[in-house]
Image (tube, rainbow over all chains, first blue to last red; front, side, top):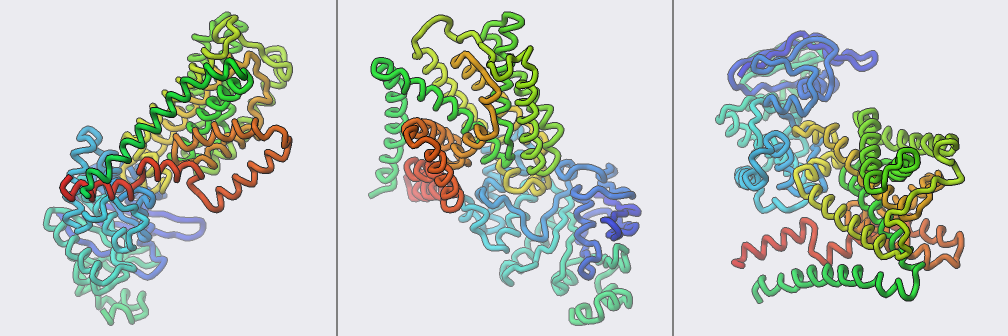
Length: 242
Length: 333
């Protein structure tokens, strides 16, 4: 797996949200993406995911350019994402939510095959008992799991998780933590945005810190943790606590 | 009691209701032809509105795309067939498919222009489109006969019986409902509902949002055009007043009061409201006030309409009922 972002720029009006961001990795890794509010983390994920078009710069995944593609085309290339505020299809059942990406990307396999796969995914996420419930009846944490399940239905290689632990019950947070590790073991790569410092420092193999659209630190989490620029960006508190 | 016995009556009720409805729908015109041709006519028009309300509900309730151009597509179907008949001598049986095609192509052109944007653009664009089309037809008197009305050949020639028209419109309603039901239950329907819920999230899950929105818009435009063609060759005259915006409002009210997310409920809403408007004709303008109030109350207190919840209860539809059914299956049925 090869992923490369080169000199990515994106602005909104007078605000430069991404100011020439470059980032690359090969093989599968869990990369943590942190930074203060407004540092450009979600913009970066939205730009990789195709929701925003970059002003300039390139994004390549396994040798193919995926910048300027629509979100569904990015997904076809094996890059999937979850949202900061969950966006499950609320008036559809849990199973239907899982079927959408599967049938959109691989219609030839048919609904029955995908329903069987959906049962496996829900078993893995211990949510099988909820398969016929409306997504809107799930808790926030369960909806986060459902979004993860949607990505598991397809052959997503790089998972962009935007705040997977935010607002989640501690027990469910532990579960999400474990699922990420299991999926990593299966060869998936992750780019995870999180404000939950304990989780992100424990989980990540590499930590990237954004501030005002620039990468101010990138490397081993235990080294980045004590980087002066990072401490300054966070006013010294959160990182030291972590 | 085992779940088998608990479920059996619901299946019987489902088929019983469908069978009785079909028998009544087939038998009633023979009775009405003897006692009241007027009420037979009202039923034909009610089926016409049922087709429009249910196809609009596919677009708005299932796909989440609010169009105010549905009556305009209906008129395109009718006028195309009428004009082809008048100027090229095309018989209705060829004119109606041609009108359906033109309605679909117009829907395609509008869809390509609007459906890449947010839903509000489609709503505003289709209001403008409907009015422009109406003014154009009114203004081009030399071609369309404007407010004088475009006379069309009757679909079944010189016959004075309304029965062929009744059964044609009924068949059109049944087949359009069956087709739309199949579509909603296919993967296309799944994607349309996902788009209704959240376009951006649907796209992020791999759905080609513009493609499926366009597909829904073209299909519903064609259904409206087809209904318009039959309607025009039944009434025998078309005027721009047929598709003024209040008429579009009526179709929307039918779908919403019936249940905008259910094709069958929207169709039943169309039939009930059209028949009720005739029953309450003595109330003159007050009948519109009554239906306006009913629409407001429905929107406030019954967001899935008044008919759809009844159908869900009767036929055990919806995810909760599905869950109950699967639970009873897992208990050893």
